Length: 512
Image (cartoon, rainbow, N blue to C red):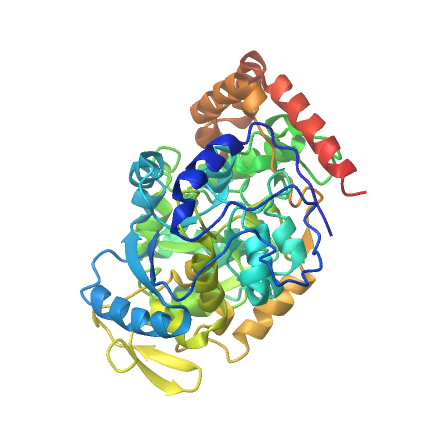
């Protein structure tokens, strides 16, 4: 499947200038004039246009999300470099950053400075923004040539879903690429009060159990709505561009202002009902992180969540959701994948990289070499974990190296060692989950808001004013939604809808 997306204003000139400056260090800017099809190559010339002299060592400077307090960071890095020198004559300078650093000013400043680095983790809107600003390399041909096994793992449909104007600006993580909608609940609390949740099919079915919590556990909130999780987040709305302003609903084939739909009203009414019954934290609209805080403190009975195979076992094994044991109820009949699942986690090569080939060779190893992947994820055997079978380990507490919960960021989770409580068939289950998932009509469509950026920005400001109060039930929905949409109209939402519709029609035409 070949999908082409309409994106205007890519700063290709900037990319060409930066690469021209840096190409003396072993790489050449590729000729992107071809149509992306494989060509015969009788003279064994690089099809990507980049070259690499592997007899010359190269240091890869890498920024990613990790634990910035690992005492054994340098020790693990030395072990990784011993292996990489033997494999591709490269070394890695590992630079773990906190979420707020890599998705905030720190990484933005690194990118804006023009200083040399080679690889970064990125996702979602930041991926789209960096690509359209010309900060990232198109790695489509590089990946075909130097990471063919990684490409085969991901599959062309998934890869196409991340392309912008027909170009690929990062290597996706091989992980779950769809979602179930679920309710997670404290199994130990349910057992304490002999709750039988086997017939729960909807949030309304949880109300009798929430009432028990209100009566029996006065320090516990029945439902931990927050952290972006609310009835709207669990709806079947297809958010175009990930921003939530415009999109599709199950009954709409045209782009719409989502906040004018009956679906949004129904979700808002459900949130208000939960609020008025006292099931949720009343200040969630002001503190969206409250659900996580209360959950980690043991003060939440149930919480909405997206779900996938193996997630429950990971949570219970890591103890990352606070005290007690968790169980889940899957509410959706099928797994659904939208474009956000094609763009949730990338390793991207910036235009200032001096040797993209060596970096892509590293990514091929990271995604296919079991020893290297688990060394990066878990550290050194015997020091940071104990191996209890061929593919199962136990982490050593306070060992000095920990990337627990961030393994998916590093690429192919299917070759990660299993941990206690995880199913022997976890990766087979995820593979089947991905294979049988249903994808939204707009899967792979990423709009460009640059031609309506004034209206888009104004609409986002209006959303910031109204959205949380509505979706967390803090206001009567009908009147609040009317005021919300009146202000959106004034801000230019109709122009945004029209522009995205035009782009969407053009995008669909390329897929017919």
